[in-house]
Length: 372
Image (tube, rainbow, N blue to C red):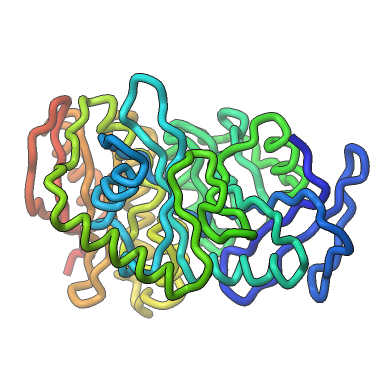
């Protein structure tokens, strides 16, 4: 499916989108500032992976309304902000499977996108997360402000402001060590991918979030007050729901861990996205000394790189005790011990806070800090 106008939405509030008009097989750039469409064109707006957190969870429900509640319940502990500050959209239901993709976007950022589209007379736009498109396997694309890495853990986005060591470690952890980084125009690339496979529409500007969600499960809304009430209702409903998170088999646990790897840095003002969190912590929380978030994270990624038996599930940084708190999955206890030895060999102090047995391996909560 081809559109008349394509929009690349910004990952931060206050920044201008990029616009382009389709001319045959080419895109003609448009000036976003003050732009007003003269007719009602067909519009697709792409939401960057840095701004839309993507989870993959098991959702068992009798209706789409219940599915939304169950999905929110499944990811609420991993959100970086209050539930009323985010908007949730579900991907389509896969046949013979309870696994659903869940897209989370900061409500304030989403409202900013919708305001721009409305003012530009682009209110027919469908908002499509770039993470829902089918990128070529084993590729690293440089979109200027972000890298998109599609490797062993699926599509992962890295902020261009990350230190080079962190970006390299992420590429290595995705199994793409030595891969060529291909510079590409974001709009041209995304428009081409969308024409082949449209992805998931999480919102339509006419009706607000979920106006015509392809998953069929999102409700329309008109004003921010209604949004807040709806989110609060979902939050309250999730409390009395007796549905517990379905504990999947080993393959499902791995799928969830990979998704959470891309979006499990709590505490960010933007959605719970590994990239947004690293960007925020790199700019705001990194101490002046050499024992802060950045060197600890680089050492952790370096210890993970090259291993196909270690999965990072969650990572947070405590400024108070200057330590990383990491949840990882290992093939066995020997695998965990070898990982800890690699960190200790890098001059770090590692302690185990908790260990849990899984259907295929173990899950450990580790505390990593600089050695005194």
